[in-house]
Image 1 (spheres, helix red, strand yellow):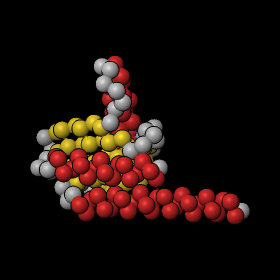
Image 2 (cartoon, one colour; image 1 turned 135 degrees about the horizontal axis):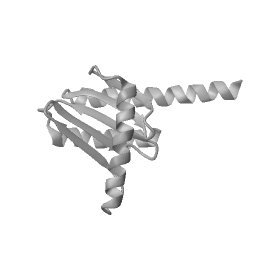
Image 3 (cartoon, rainbow, N blue to C red; image 1 turned 60 degrees about the vertical axis):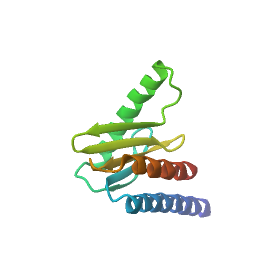
Length: 132
């Protein structure tokens, strides 16, 4: 019983730290309309979404994008996939590697300062990689 309680406590501590990192990132970049940490298999780990898109759909779409992006990078001999930037008329979607098991997804407004967004997302993804 102690081991199970201790594992649950560690899991909750990690989840709180992940959520803290997302909140910090969102407060630094008001142009972010949503953030999610997703396993590479497409399962939601944590999210702060300010859009109408369901977090499970974001997870599934992220996994599909990762699979294709990994394949492209591999086939074109570009090394290991680091990030994907998708631009649309209504904004950006950034998928950034966050370690062996997860990615950080950022959804930004079209007028967001891309350099700052990418820099802060990279820093947050590095922090997440150490936790997940």
